[in-house]
Image (tube, rainbow, N blue to C red; front, side, top):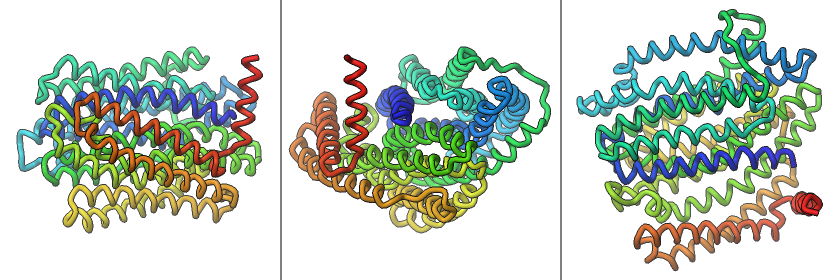
Length: 520
């Protein structure tokens, strides 16, 4: 029940952020279309966003949360944990300033490295460099946000960190509303909006940590034993997450060499793919890491494995219908959300096809978020590095093999296939070490969830045919059709999952009884 409550808090507020994100993308698609200026901004945004995923959702939390939790639940308590946070901040902040300065100076070289396809178009290349220089300070800001998020998550206060990304989306929405011309001016406004959003996020997290009783002071940088321990854990985690993010930059490299608009197609399809990944996967990973770390520290590995098993069950219950539904209704969904203005029916069709391919890897993405805390809680950040390196090599090989014959669709397939490769390797290693295994009852429940998903697919396919004319109609009709599909799909899936035994019926009854007692 505590896990469900934590997931509800994180997932619910993440959903709020994603709603703002969709509003941003819907407005951006209509104002910017799949143009050269849109492609340039998306490359400029991908660089700091890559580091956001690296620090905010990966390496930093993997290294910081277990060590903060050790001190928090140790003899020193909150004071020892605060001192540790200040020591890390003292070294982290100047490092970030130096890193940001180097990239600002060398930005043309770096943009050429990840988007050399733009080098043949000097105006587009120069625009990308200028926009990236504006967005790059977001890296420094979001890295500090990740520190305060780690503090709050360790204290099991998840709300502020989960809501913070909404402020970025609000800032970018405001930029589009203020400068709606759809060309270079809008691209510059969006870039400024990214950095402003970073300041807003940092302000929210700093204030939330202060209210939680953790006010961090700036100290003189010093490599204390705590800082050394942090870097011993976080550097391998950074390398592991970094390998994955390098894979993302490699995808950017290949996408920029495809026809104009390819970056836009990849961005809008990934936006829909990221919704369940963030709401389910990231929420679960964030919620269970402190719990697993606590049980490992107390010498209770069976309880840690139990938490991980519950997370796998819950992740598949929520993720499988999302993946199947997105694959079935990808085309109509993209048309309903993004088609209009400068974003044509052809743009929507290609984006829908890319989405249908990418979501085949969605369950694996989510499972990786659930599996990796089993390594991080044991301060093992090296194993994910090794698996990520293998995945990186596989990604490059698949891109070279699939992109020439299949273009953007080959790139999408490589992304999905590599997510499954990473998931399988991590699980096999964790199981071989005796830390976690999917028991027979859990396999049975997953297969029942798949059966419920197939029933949902049949219903959604029939509704898609029935509502075909509505999907080709006005924006209002398209949105009504999407709501009908989502509602029907949810009712059919969860109804079938309950009947088939794909969910914990006893847990649901217990939760219902508790609510009735509270109401009484």
